[in-house]
Amino acid sequence: MTPRGTSEELGVVVIGTGRMGADHVRRIQQVTSGARVTAVVDVDAERAKTVAARVDGCTAYTDPASAMAAADVDAVLIASPGPAHEAALLTAFEHGLPVLCEKPLTPDAASALRVLEAEQSLGRRLVQVGFMRRYDAEYVRLKALLKTGQLGRPLMLHNRHRNVASPPGFTSGMLISDSVAHETDVTRWLLGHEITAVTVLRPTPSASAPDALQDPQFVVFETDGGAVSDVEIFVNCGFGYQVQAEVVCERGTARVGDGHAMVTNMAGRWGGTIDQDYTVRFADAYDREIQTWVDATRRGETVGPSVWDGYAAAAVCEAGVRALEDGGRVRVELVEKPALYR
Image (cartoon, rainbow, N blue to C red):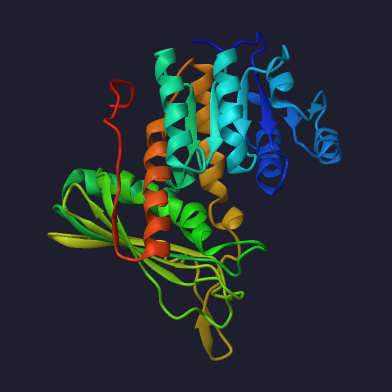
């Protein structure tokens, strides 16, 4: 498949012009080669117009279908809220447009499965799901090390995911569906295993957590490869944004995310800085992710995390929310993996 447009640059419509979408517009225009933003979409017409006004030749829309029908649109980047993803993805399929869809693919396993079945009926992949940690330099090195087999079989994976503060309206379930969704994909990708069961432990909530928010949580994944992965998710830690992972294998361990690129010694103190936001910690990963998508799309290919990965993450997170709410261990139920994604 080749892009629909005829220009050398890929014409991209960005759906959703909130914080993530606006940052992707900036990234495509200022960092990425081989693409330009030709349209933006948002239900907030004024916000869409404001973002479009920053880009020469960019048109603002409020309806994704109208934007995708435009002659200067060759590909779609979805950065709208999760509940709007399914409709946008199915419309993109109707137009044969390649898509980069920010996580979650969709908010639940049932809708993700509908998307999977729709893409499967096309007989080819069109979607790259935005699990950007797969493009982070440290995680890439860790994955490469594990593939060599030098450390032996992975036994355990320890993950820490901390945010300064949760946004307004953040719920206890969203700690899993919006935050631990990343560790869900990291676990599956690093270990090469599917997650088969989820248990969620509930420490006494932090005094810094908003009322009724169960924060922190301790999530345990079991995998079909016999490994165990745990996640400390703490979204109101107060001091910074930290994402760390340590793999414990038969013959050694490996850890990423310590953030010790520079350590200073001054005035009787030593230390460094802690990132305050995911857009800082993973800026390079986002850059590589978008460039990889653009390059592959211009070649007529689809690479990276697939709709299957998005569906599996949705199913795991759904099980995790049930484990949080009901207690106990909840099994993850997946359909048989289609040949398109093997």
